[in-house]
Length: 526
Ligand code: ADP
Ligand code: MG
Image (cartoon, rainbow, N blue to C red):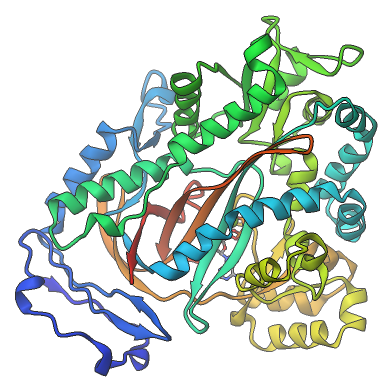
């Protein structure tokens, strides 16, 4: 049986612009896709038709390929003797998702500018404190990070003066293609624990394998995805700047206990070893508090129980309050912050990636304080969605803010309400958003209001736990950026690959780890 794809928003279809395609182009045996290029405000997008019956054998091959090539997550099934070593393929999309090439390449090109923006914002601690202060009054986690920033200021200044400041950024800027405007609008800019980089590179390889099997998929339309090389190379560059070549040492990957996504992280560890002979030690903040020693008098070197110095602390934890169950974890964070190791991220980088800062940068003139070149600033602004402060002072004094709040109360479906949280599942939508805005009050200082981005709907085959289903879907693109600076010496600043996450169009949230989305990859159309 052929399951016909329901085309959303038919009104947008400009039939006069559809090129003629011979029927023979589309019949490909196993799985039938029909790409219908059409113009959507200059954006070419695909729709497809899937022969439901025959997708099964392709799914089976994709799952086997994923298991064979390490595109896996831990199963955490207690029936296994050691659940950590039982794995299953990562949730994935069988076919890549169409994106307009021009917009995609622009998002890649601006990534070094976003890296530079984070570095500039993080360096302006007065700005961070001033902007986050009101939110911190009602958000104790942000408040605690600000306190750590203040408590470590002297140690960090001493390190900088001694020419030993090494900064490492591994960022991911997330976007959705906004159908009404045709632009990629930024969802958020992640500066801590940007995950799935390595599994995403494997996802690209899986789709290249699919393209080798299915002649109507052109491999040249799947862009290169160098995360497996770039992320370890950036960490190694920071380790070398700290002194790994001369003095040895290890990378500490700061992890959550019982991490299910450890295989994505292990790919970085393998890259660090195979490409740079750099060893990684996985530790929780609790482990660090219990065993690591900071030599304050001797220039801030942290040593582990083994006596090895730490060159880099790379965080895949520490972004959510539950990562700090006791004072010990905060003590570990402070110790790391005072150390002469490179931290990915520093507390300042983490704060620069908060949603409140994202909102504040979008205010007229603020971004421009950090990005001096007018054209660069204008280019970045092309990616900004509508963002509004909910600080009662701003609502009272800024007519634009008041109008947005009133509009959100009457049309909540056009907005998203976000607290200062990372990791998925925290945003408010619909009735909850309306009720929270109506209740008002000072505590709203810890939230921001954001324009809802409206991505075009696609049709995807989603594969989870070896089972597939066909759904109407929305996709989110992430571009990775790596950045290394030693004092005033910029060692690295580049675009380092991408991630696409696809979710059913009925789901508000989009995290893969949180179970909302699957891994995907972009298929570029001109
Ligand atoms: P988190 O730090 O929890 O990842 P995000 O800002 O990325 O927070 O929001 C989580 C998810 O919510 C996103 O992956 C996306 O699917 C959805 N989302 C967030 N902001 C918007 C928006 N402005 N428009 C539409 N969807 C959004
Ligand atoms: Mg996110």
